[in-house]
Image 1 (cartoon, rainbow, N blue to C red):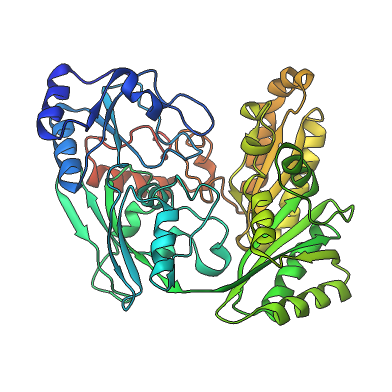
Image 2: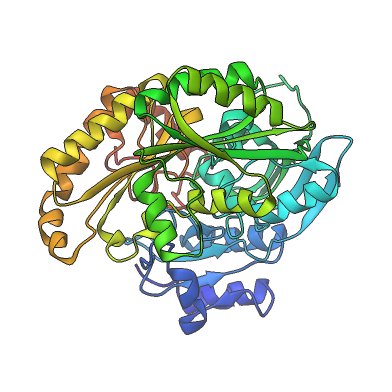
Length: 473
């Protein structure tokens, strides 16, 4: 990459406040992603304090043909904030757009700037007697803007949907520096194209989201989770159906946790293993309601045991026990629990139709046994929406070199399996650079042409986040 000229830097400093433009060592902390990978050797980081500052930054960059790489909480996992290699660029951080603009309980909405963290939105909603449903492990650092850009999912999708389903309207800065205010709090509006959806999941390639009207849902003061030791992967689909039958409308999360990940989290942390039934897999399920859910849980567990799918189970009876269960889930990724060699692993964000989950997991495990017997393979994640995070990584020093020799072959096999099951390589983390050159077969060439046409119409100079998401035509 190359840095913008001193003329551009001076123009940015003149247009913004003294804290807004960072260079050199001051910018370094913005250039390391969650996988400890550098997003650039060096960069100019611009931190506007408001929408007008974002618009001024974009206008200056457009005038001088300097690319704009947007950054939210820098918690993304798909190399979506790496600087381009073929032109000058800046990193535009929305970290200082950190205000909750309004909370409207009667409208069931909250309006927040792009740099507000998901956790802060959740807390503000709770204080107003409402709930903001999207939730995932990086809630304390992930921002509204980044979550919208990747159409983030997380633990509660089975009941409340992805980020897309929880955004009612957005404000965004376009490629010429103009500001589109589409922050409407309308449940129904059929007056034309719903343009906000172009930006949700657009990974910052069409514009910079600066604030959004987010949907709130009724508070669920009675939230209880259970961890069930299950007989195997073939128990997942019938258990999900039993959960819907015995706790209709109450399931907010239905997660798969492998024993190997639970043991590892316990080994390296203060977490406790609440149950040890000797099974390979556990189901972590949360029920949430305005009323107690104890009877619903009991009914589900009884039905699951009678059907021969549940070996044993534990129900969280205190806030500490609840927190412990979700600590195990939040730290199941190898970035948290297999720290020694996790940087070499394949960490998948795949999704398949819910009824193909068992087929997919078994196929990946079989492929790993065949291609990469020196590596550990395990899967965890969101059973309720088909988004399983499969992981293949070396866990011993002597396994690293032979694993790296077969990693590409393993990656190719996984792609074949995903596409063969009508799945996606990116369910909630985005495409970025990581998957850009792999997702081509997932869509028809006509569909890619339609996406390129949208990009060309809204960003004809390829100003925003170039080289991301869309394969080269």
